[in-house]
Length: 262
Ligand SMILES: [Zn+2]
Image (cartoon, rainbow, N blue to C red):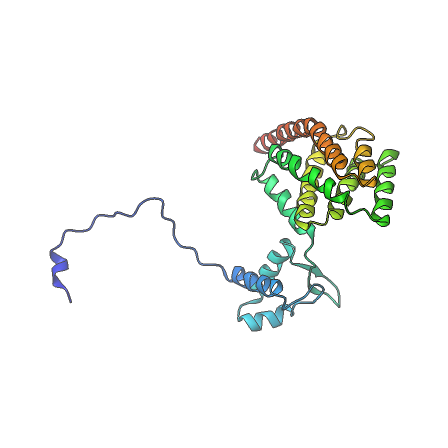
């Protein structure tokens, strides 16, 4: 044993303030991670049922509360859906673009991405989507686009959300047609964010009637450059409505948080 220590000066406490204690993953978090990994690596396919709570508790050697908490967490993040009743359980969800879109909406709600950024990105992506779509017209897509355009021009929608959905359909069909799933994922996510904002501020000024007609006509004429240009014009024209919506959304959010704190 080193006896010199006793003669040394007492060491000063030099731990900087910014260190935080190391947190161990909680049991349920570790269970959730492992379940997610096994879904992503394909051990469980979409539609498969995960083992029961009891079986999972035995395999993980943890209590059922941790299993329940882990299942709740991966349900919230969209990996499984809980079904109830005799044939119930946790079923693996088919990961779809909804998963990505809801992540974008969450990022928007927590102020990590903004409408002006969305607008800027849209100016690049959507004209390209329209250009690509004009090169991939099939009779089925032509019919879908024509019907979507007619439906939105009817203007006989019962509610604002329905109206928004009908105005977004043309964009979503084009996104699917373009054949690039990164673009499609982005377009779907962008539409989900816009829908959220528009519904929240009850924006009924989004699209003038017939706004999509020049785009659809150029795509149906298989005119990539015309479609690209028509979509770019649409995105620019829509930009003002977008920034107005954003302003109203922020005012509303501020008002709501003040109302809560009072
Ligand atoms: Zn539009």
